[in-house]
Image (cartoon, rainbow, N blue to C red; front, side):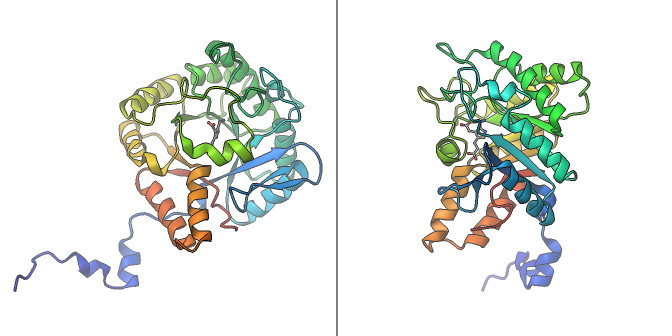
Length: 318
Ligand code: PBG
């Protein structure tokens, strides 16, 4: 009989030793919870493809924020769906826009919650693209609007801004815009974002931001490209990004690990709506053990290099 010299199973023998040698532990400190805010009063629209999540008017958003805080989650990222959409997404640059009103209300009611905003236009434009559009999304015109957007967000109480539009120069433009208005202490979390089918539930139901024509492939990255993600991130870091976010998360763990290793910056990963929906749907059918798979997915994202995880599982509802 062959007797192995090395026995890895010694440290797997029982829960005590497994607990002692565990390398990766997910805690509420890692989480950022995405929330969707809509105009009006006393409105909750459940998002059917993202069980447990809903679009909420500001009054309910505030209640939700308190629940989230009481669960030990420190931070939320806000997405706004405006009353009126137009060609250049003007609600997003208005101090009376949906996000600014939400920020003011949240800062007042739950001051200890760290507020992150999405700096992008796809929820606000009537064509659903991430900036004003002629034949293509106009990159440099979008930068000017982004500068306005982040300044009104900062004035309304945003603690951090997260540009997700994948425009060239967006981090530099936003840094300049914030600094010029005295917001040099607001960090920027920039995206390494892929043109992914996993955003389906978010676009269709949560943010109502599906492009009315074409797709986002002329600004979001090709899922096939890893080196491009490194180059994109290098530019963001040079322009002043404080945190890099990889999105989606699970199908891009290789990218996450490369970015973490290459730059050593605090790195976030967004477990997006489609990743969440897949697990929920399979668990609903009894095909997967919900809590087990949830925790395994979050642990693998952290193990691959994420310091922060944006996830719809924060409350473990549904
Ligand atoms: C765009 C944005 C998207 C998501 C977050 N910000 C969608 C897109 O690029 O179409 C998707 C997040 C998710 O799927 O959970 N501002």
